[in-house]
Structure formats: C-alpha cells, structure tokens
Amino acid sequence: MDTTTAAPAPAEALPRHTRVLVIGAGFGGLGMAIKLDEQGEQDFLVIERGPDVGGTWRDNTYPGAACDVPSQLYSFSFAPNPEWSRSFSPQPEIQAYLERVASESEVLDRFRFDTSVEAATWDEEHRRWEVATSAGTVTADVVVSAAGALSDPKMPDIDGVEDFQGKVFHSARWDHSYDLAGKRVAVIGTGASAIQIVPEIAEQAAHLDVYQRTAPWVMPRRDRPYTRLERLAFRHVPGVQRAYRTAIYWGRETFVPAFTVNPRIAAPAKKAALGNIRKGISDPSLRARVTPTFEIGCKRILISNDWYPALDREDVELVTDAIEKITGNAVVTRDGVEREVDALVVATGFHTTDLPIAEKIIGRHGERLADQWAREGMSAYKGATTHGFPNLFFIVGPNTGLGHSSMVFMIESQIAYVLDALRTMDRQGIASVEPKPRAQEHWNRDIQRRMRRTVWAAGGCSSWYLDSHGRNVTLWPRATFTFRRLTRSFDVEKYDVTTPSPTTTKVARTA
Ligand SMILES: Cc1cc2nc3c(=O)[nH]c(=O)nc-3n(C[C@H](O)[C@H](O)[C@H](O)COP(=O)(O)OP(=O)(O)OC[C@H]3O[C@@H](n4cnc5c(N)ncnc54)[C@H](O)[C@@H]3O)c2cc1C
Image (cartoon, rainbow, N blue to C red; front, top):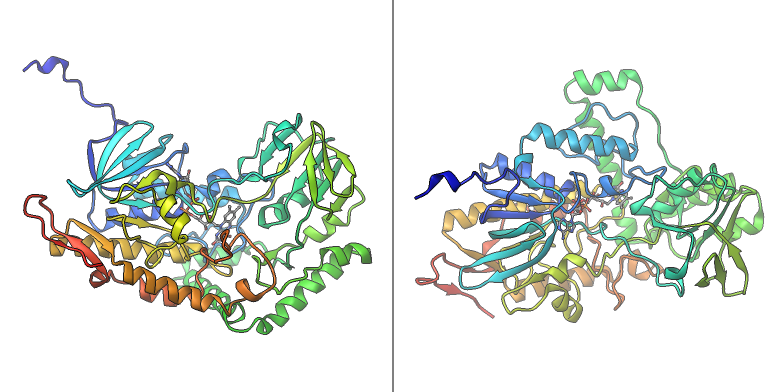
C-alpha cells in the first residue's frame, strides 16, 4: 500500500459515521452536545449552518435585541453566569455567554459550522440515518434536530414586496451596514422584535411608519442593572444566584393558571398593561388604537417601557389600516394612502408551524416529515419523537413552546429525555426506537383537549401559535415542572423498538 498518498483528513472533514448527529448550535444543540459529552458519549457531531454557536442570539442582532425572560433563568442551569449586567440581558451579552460556555465545555471540536443539513433519510436496512450536508454525507444512528422553532424568518405575503427598490431586511437578518439615519423607514409588525426595534430606530430615522395589524398587550419591563453588591454575591456567596433563579422560576410559573384555567386571574397584568398605555401615550385616539381587543395572554405578552412613548413621537406614525401592496418606493394601505419609504424593516416572525427542517427529513415510509405534518398536523410524542421517523428526536419540538417562562428549562428537559433514550438503547441493545402511533395520538389528544380552555384558544385572537387549521401546535399547556417530570426518563414501553443486526433483527412493532 502506498502510504505516502494517504494524507490525513483535514480537521474539518466530516466522519463517515457518527452515533448522534445534532442539527443546530443554539441553546438546544449546544446544551445537547455538552450533556452528551458529560454522559461519556463522545461520538457525536453538531452540524450548524451559521458561522458560530448561538442560534437565535447569533442571528437576532437588531437594535434593542434582548431577552424577555430574566437571564438568571434564561441560561443553562449547569452554567450560571455571575456576570449578567442586568435582569434582562441584551443580545451581545447572551451571545457572549453562549460562546464562552461553548469554548469552556471543550466540545467545539465536534461542531461543523457553515455547514447545512440538506436532507436526512432513514435507511431501514441499516437502521440509521443518512444525512446529506453541504459538506458531504454522514450516517448517524440517531439524529437530534435542534434546528430551532424561531430560526427561519418569515417574509410577509404582501403584494409587490419583491418589487420594492429600497432596502428591505428581516429583523432576524439585520443589515448593520445600512445606515437608517435620516431615512424614511417602515416597520411591518408589532410583535416581540418590533417593539424592541422601534424605540431604538425612531431615534435615528427621519420618519418612522409602524404598521400594526393587531395591537399587542405590552406590560412594563421590570428591568434594572444589577448592583455591584449583587454581582459580588452572585460570584462569591454560594446559593445566591440559585435563589434568584428559583424565585424567578416560581414567579413565572404563577402565570400558568391565567393562561390555562381562567384568564380573569390575569386581571392585575391587564391593569398594568393598560396603565403602561396611559403612561406612555397622551393622545386619546392613539391610546384607543393601541388598546388590544382580545384577552391578555392570547398572543405573546410583550414587555417594554419605551414602546408607547416611541409611538407617541411626532416623527413616528402608527398605521392601522391594512397594507394593500408595496410599490417600488412606498407602502400603500387599503384606504388608498401611499407612504413613501427608503427602507422596510420586516418584523413578521418565523416559520413556526411549518418548520423548514421537516421538509428535509424523510422517514421509514419514504415520506417527508413536512408532508406527514401537513396531513396530520404538526405533532410529536412528548414534543420529541414522531412515528414513522425512528431515532429522530426534537429539541423544542411541537407543543413545547412557552408564553411565560424560559425555553432553556424546556430545552434541558428534552435533553434529559434524549440522554435517557440513548442510555436505554445501550442497556437493552436496541437499534431503533419509534413512538407507537397510539402513544403519540394519546399525547396529542390530551394536549388539544387541554388547549380548548386556554386563553390561546378562547382569548379572541389569532396568533403565530396556531397552525393553518387553528390548532395550537406550538405551546405547552401545562406547568413547566409537569413537562420536566414527564420527560425525566425515557418510557421505552411507549415505543416500537428493533434490535441491531439487520440479519437477526427482531422487529417489535405494533400498530
Ligand atoms: C428575538 C428573539 C428573542 C427571544 N427571546 C426569548 C426569551 O427571552 N426567552 C425565551 O425563553 N425564549 C426566547 N426566544 C426563543 C428562542 O428561540 C429560544 O429561547 C432558544 O434560543 C431556542 O434555541 P434552539 O437551540 O432551540 O434554536 P435556535 O437558537 O433557533 O438555534 C437553531 C440553530 O439551528 C440552525 N439550523 C437550522 N436549520 C439548519 C440546517 N438545516 N442545517 C444546519 N443548521 C441549521 C440555525 O442556524 C440555528 O443556529 C427568543 C426568540 C427570538 C427570535
């Protein structure tokens, strides 16, 4: 054999096979990688289309970007950060935190950045996934999709938007090279991102038009910098930071009954939000137009102290007439008014109920997950696994989203479930697991039954939580500690399993 030609593979080359392939390097993918490593599972690979870890926090760099769940809770339980500067950290701090956690965890050697997963196809004969990426193909026993539920920006479906000759960008793909100073700018949308962006760019733009379809509920933002003493205590006094986190967790959990049992419990929140309008806006007709007409909580409750004052500015116009079309240089509303603009900031959210990653996953029957979900509605067992798709796990899968607390809590619950699934597979010599259709059906029937009485279903609004059939396929309708309990261990009895060797395979599938 001529060894002189056998050059070592470049460090970045993909292996031919890995035990666990993780898609995405946000909180979900990074947390999964760290915990796999901790469990002694070294054979994994994280494929990330972006240039770094961070996901949401790498991509959403718009002016004013910050979390709306206090950072003490919106961070990994296993990596507390005594350096948070304030209760709701700005995006650069969260991104720096994730980068630091990643580099200190020593798992980055198994990450492949600037590489996207293009297709993942289940190979029933070999009981593994064949994953085509932009850097080549790799096989994997298990795929964990942590591709994010708010990671693919959704452009608005407005006539003529593609003909606009000025600058257009989505809030999640901010173009920092474009200077808004002195420009006429339109912001489309009044959701969580828009209410952070508008007060910031109102300061720069010559004029700002804000296009609102539905007025959101906006509560005061109880944000403040941490004092030096607090930060010293976080660093040096054992238990202080944990106590803050616990207090925030339980404080947030008290919102659950208002969402899921009786919206009247949210009366104090509603009062605070109405007070926020009165405090921020002097003009009675503007006050009326920003007052929501649906139950608080039906859409995501937003928090801001400067949203209403921004709308009250002379150089900001709130436009509530529906947009009819966009021309080369203007936005035209149904009442026929044409407002010229230089730049359009599109803050219209993400593909949440039609996850793009589902289009790339092809299961045991040769069907794309997106097609199965289009037919049956987006669903999974425990938000993690789906029948027809063996050894595929989701982090932040269907019905795991929250309107009140930290997604990192849900992410850590789901990571624990995957880890226990892997341990179970090892222990019992299992090659593949796939939830029994009955278990998945039962899980989802229970969720949809609980949904009926929630504020999201009965609160008189339509929101991005709902799919095209009006089903809430995004949110978890119970306490988060219940989700944690239900995902603590892998319930193999709810799964069809197969044993490893294709030649001696015993298939234990039941209909
Ligand atoms: C502006 C904004 C603010 C938010 N604030 C909060 C908050 O305060 N509190 C809260 O709890 N939640 C918040 N969220 C929700 C937030 O998305 C989650 O908390 C969390 O960051 C999700 O982490 P993730 O790893 O599941 O997904 P993401 O962070 O979205 O990461 C997914 C990763 O997968 C990658 N990816 C996707 N498809 C592919 C592919 N085909 N191939 C390779 N890589 C792929 C993406 O590039 C991305 O890096 C916010 C969301 C947004 C958009």
